[in-house]
Image (cartoon, rainbow, N blue to C red; front, side):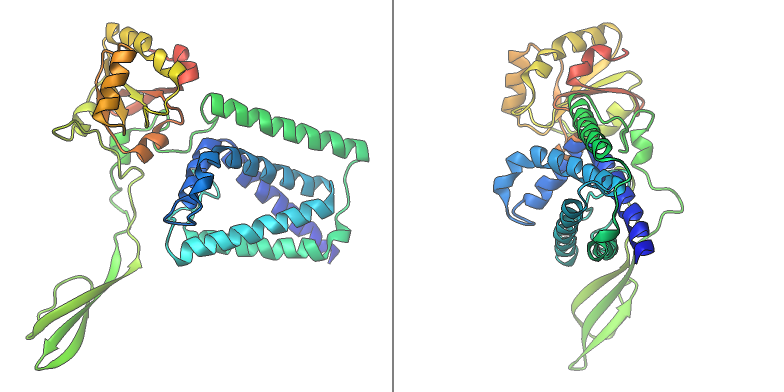
Length: 364
C-alpha cells in the first residue's frame, strides 16, 4: 500500500500541476469554457456567467496548489479531501457533458491538448482511482520538508500562481497554443492535410417494398431499390478531422471578404469581440496605433461581433479612421485574449499580436 500511495502521489500531483498550469497560462480562455458549461444549454446556471473569470482564476490556482501540496506532503487530509471533491465534481461534469453531447471539448488542458468529453471522463475515472488510493492510504503521505519549509513552499506557490495569473490577464498568455499564434498562417490552418481522416458513417435507409418495410445499409450512397422511400438514419462510426481553423470569416454588410484581407501583405487587425464591453482605455489607444500604421503603409481594419450602430458609435467617439467588419464572437475571443487586441498579418501569417496594455510594444 505504501508503494501504491507513493506512485499515486506523484502521478496525481504532477498531473494536477500540469493541468492547472496550462489553464493558469490562459485563465481567460478557461473562463470562456466555464461560461459554456454555465449556459442554459448545458448546466443552466447562467447566474454564474458574470463570475466565470473569478471562478476560473480560483479553480486553476487551487488545482496547482493542491498538486504542490500533495507532492510536498502539506496538510494531507485537507489536500486529499479537496482532490477527491474536485475529481468527483469534474467526473460528474464530464460524464454529463459526454452523455448528453453538450460540450465538444472539456477544456481540461486548455488549448494545449484537446480531449473529447468521453476521453475526459475516462481521464477523470483514472484520476479518481488513484485519488481513492491516496484517500485510503493517507497515513503514508509524509511531508518532505520541516513545518517551516512546508509553510514557505506553500506560500511561495500561491504567490507565484497569483502573480502569473495577473500577468497573463494584463498581457497575453505566456505560451500561445492556439491556431492564431505568432508564426501561424491563418489560410494554411483553414485547410486539411491530404491524409486527414474522412468521416466514416453508416446510413440505414427504410423503404416500402411490396407493402413491407425493409432496411438497406450503405456508406452514404442512395441505394438502388425498387420501392418507396420512407426515411433514413445516419450513424457516425469515425468522426472526420477538422482543420485547425474552421470558423474564421471576415464579412462586410454585402459579402465575405476573408480571402481579400488574407492576401494583404501589410494588415493590422483591431480585434474587439464586443464593443459594448471593450476596455475604454484600450479603445482610446486605437486612433494613435491606426494612424501610425496607415503612415507606414498598412491596411487597418476592425473585427467585431457587435452591431452596426455600436460600430458607428465607437468610430465617432474615438475618431477612428478604419471600418469594422463582422466576425464570430467565439472566433475573436480565440484570436487574441484581449478586448480590444491587435494582430498584424502578412498574407495571412501572424507577425505580431498584442493586448491593449501592450499596444506601444507592437513592431509596425
